[in-house]
Image (cartoon, rainbow, N blue to C red; front, side, top):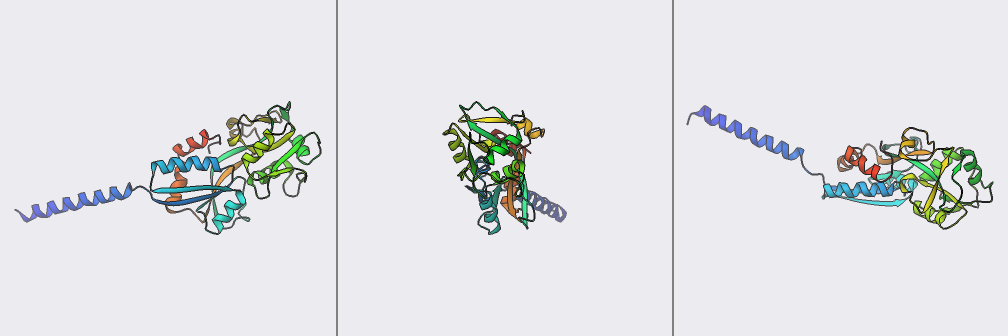
Length: 263
């Protein structure tokens, strides 16, 4: 056989092998382990995202835990979690070296017992109630370190230097615990994530505006905050792939199905 034909055949084979190897590498399924810790408001959304991603990528194992936003931040800072979840705005001064990814937005709902006659309150009325200036209500709140509590204080109570939540408030350590406490007390009032509301409680309009995906998106409902994924430095590897998937159309569809507001 002519030498030039042999060389040509070898070149073609090498090119074919190279293309095959490149294609194989480009479409390699991700693998690894991701631990997600933090906000109990973000937790249900994160669990559904993790479940769907694992189903599509079985070699990626994702564990999702609650504990509160402050626990999420600490877990990322000390390296015990790849992703921390946080449910309020977070300043770079409070979290130096921490990368923030907004995966959804959320309204903070004011809730009362489903048998209550209350349907609409002004923001000022809510502030007075949670300050303990209306004895007809039993105030239910979240614990210190809760992202939902921090956002509520910033948006309703005037921030850390504003009005304090009454010391007589019943303090709960999770979103579900707040919901159950309000559902079980005819005089109770509390606050919780729009994404986690169900018919066991009644949602109150604020200044005539009902919290919903539409009113959070258009800004007419003012009591809203971001759902954050936090990483120590910029995300890399399988963690980055997962976050990018969460922000894709497929991931954001799940966010919407879980009652949060897509970004």
